[in-house]
Amino acid sequence: MGAGNSKKGKPKPRGRAGGTPASWKKGQSGNPKGRPRQGTSALEIARRIGDEKLKLGQGRGEVTMIDALIRKLYQLAIDRDDMAAARLVLSYRDGHPVTPISGVEDAPLRFVLEKIGDHGVAAADSGNGR
Image 1 (tube, helix red, strand yellow):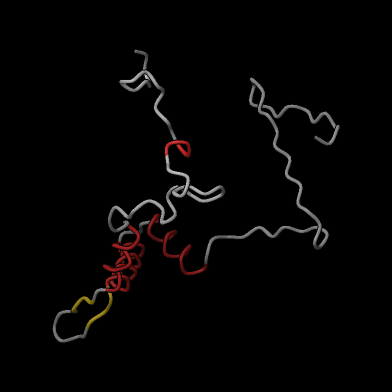
Image 2 (cartoon, rainbow, N blue to C red):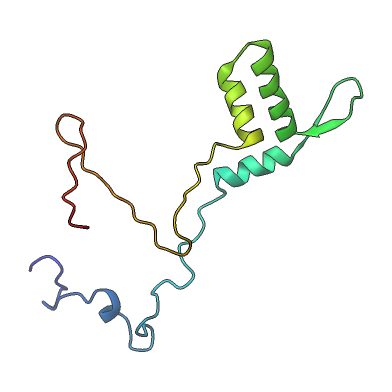
């Protein structure tokens, strides 16, 4: 018997053909609830930990973990002259630089992707609009 054959010599039904007529309707997903969750994502864990309270010493109150982390980044940027920490603090404080796109309002945007040649130079545009 070949691969995919049942013991009686008939091919195994697969996909929609394998279900009963009432179990699969045309246009209906075979898994309507989607893939089951496998656990908590790293993002959810990071948010939960960031919201936890951290007690400051000597009765100075408490702050959230995210507040403490940002304060630590500021300290690293200043005390150690850490440029990576400084850039990170500034990028979150001021946001990353944004390059505005200008053009005709409500007109579609056209992007041109150029193929890079063997010597690192963009290939010439054929000019045919494709």
